[in-house]
Image (cartoon, rainbow, N blue to C red):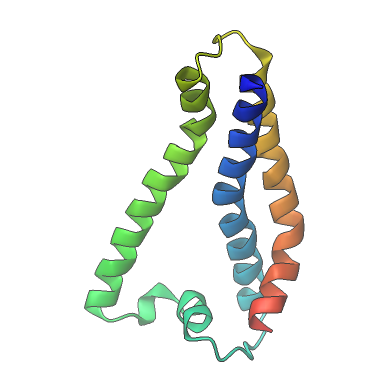
Length: 123
């Protein structure tokens, strides 16, 4: 049971890590391709705007947001190992590696599903 929780933590960490990457990559490709956004959602429009168009305060906020994202990203990568340590799962247990595989599987799914999610949000 404890090993299964370690694997589930890898899945959940993968969702936190890779869904924004998959959607962001799709948004970048659509924006570079000249796609016109039809969304009226102000958050989607803000996320699709180039950082160079932000005000000085907006650029500072963007830098802070990127730094926060780095902390979240690397923190989420460590979640399966931390959960394993918390649940006292041995370090040599294969469940930790399965959690890493689950995380990467979610990454693959996110990169495949990212364009569909982006189209749903913005186009």
